[in-house]
Image (cartoon, rainbow, N blue to C red; front, side, top):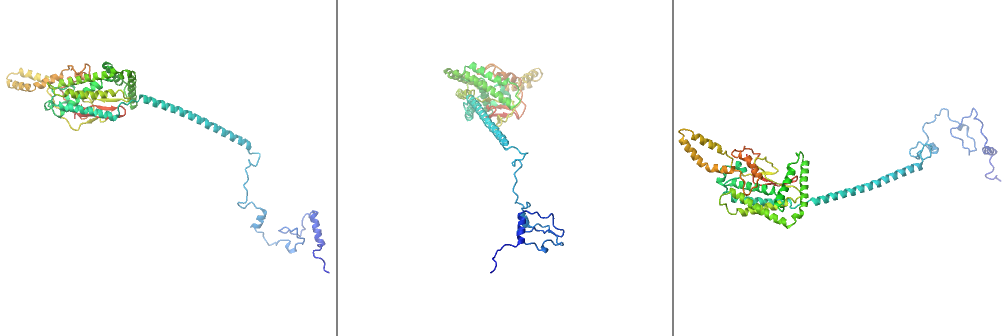
Length: 471
């Protein structure tokens, strides 16, 4: 009978296992003739290693190339991507890191401060915005209360063009009926203008009528609905505010002066609002229109032939009504609408003036009364000068009417349509000494103007004045 399979192991293997269980320490070292194997012996293998496998070949050199299988089982840290990221020292709870609770409290404190500053700044911005809005509304209300536009720019242009057309019609109708000229215009009119009665006399009539309107209505009437003396005094005050101001050196100063004049005028009209709304104001306007028409007609009749041409009074009435209608709206404006007439020998201003394309006859030197009187005396004192005296007498007869005309023009007497102290009368004294002298030729100076220039000061020019030059 065969022995049973799986019997007890040999005795030698049992002793080896017992030594392992009891933790028997191996001897202090291998015997001198023993060489340790490179790979550790398998403790589970009870069989001893063969003698030729217990050591290495002395001629064999170990390789420096690492074994991948060994690195895999040894868990080498040199392989890229196999290392887990290590938390920072502060999060690992090291001794040198900050306290997370403390950092959270500091961050929470900063957030609360930023939040408080944001909402405080927002409230302040809203408060300032409300103040700015209130100021803007206040300024807008003030401007609306002060902004008074009686007529717009197009309406002013239309009315002034209508006035210019009425003046042109009357000037053309009376171009052949002139007998004398105003003293201020004599040096700038040719000697044959009155005789011919052509285009130059039409331009002269435009200049004479326009300047009279400016001097007697636009520059002497603050508002036609007020008492004449009060209106004249207020207009003088308004002009003095501008004329006696300090020297203006910049556009800002010019605009400030304009605002000053407009503010004074608005305040004055507010004080006179009750008078201007009363029935007396309409009566004053009618009386002013009737009186201005009478003065303009008398002024023209003084320089026209006798009897005067028909239709002058009707045309003068239409012209005055148009001018008074414009003058009644000018002071109500919150802007400064200036009506100016370019005087002779004033410099050309292209922004306010427009040179007429159709020129006038050139000016000629006129013989003076003193030279004629002196020549007559010298001829009378000479012997044998009868023929010459006869020639002088004939020339004197030929120039008698002209000398009489010049003597009439040089008289500075007041006319029914003029007022003592007016602009025309003050200019007579300056014109008398030089009315026989020919003004120098200068294309950059005005000979005379045919109409007014209308300007909204500081903004734009509504109407340019047609002028003729001395060139």
